[in-house]
Image 1 (tube, rainbow, N blue to C red):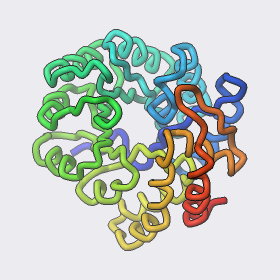
Image 2 (image 1 turned 60 degrees about the vertical axis):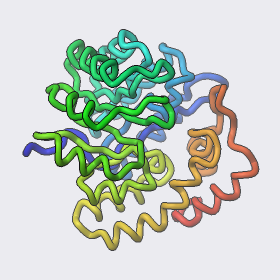
Image 3 (image 1 turned 90 degrees about the vertical axis):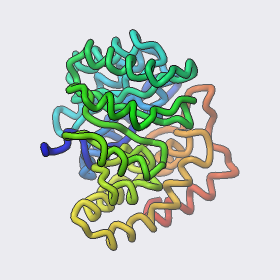
Length: 294
């Protein structure tokens, strides 16, 4: 079996904003911090990057900036999802043009296609753009759940190389290992359950927590990858509060609040998302302290 194309800790990057615009200086600082921490890859313009509320021009600005700053040092998997297939193709094509290593494509949201529609959507994108595609299943946000059998169908396409599974259902990774032949990168999209996902054969995590605690997330992954689950559990124990705290308010607002406490960016966020409530900030502060931050 060939090695995974995408693996390890892959940060779902926030998009720092200032005065209503993308803060390129802060983005560059955040990305350099990620690289210095040993992160294996990044996703610009995913859910955590506020892709749903930034303009198309801002989306492209962030992806291009990320590729340029990363300069081949880590993998860049550009968010390229849309509820319209032609728009997803456009975003994936742009990602390829500027040099991204892959595209993360979420299931179409709001319009709730059938399983046949989902399969045809992803197949159309994979046929149109010669770029490795990661499927992204997050039914809690999109209103549609991609069935295991649909994933298996799509895994047969040479340009579809893996999945970001943000369901938190650990039974799925075992089913996919048992039913999908050849190399297919199984990547968690749920920080709290990642250690269990890895134990059942997952190869990486697209992480929100690693925005704030990249070194700790890398340490946990590396311990698990070496088979040292005792050490990995110790790291998980330190991080579990932070995993949860970063979703105590509309995400990614708590992550931006945590990064603002580390003086890495402002808290500014794009409507309809709102700033982190004062009521939950003490819990985030405690979780950061437990993780050795701030």
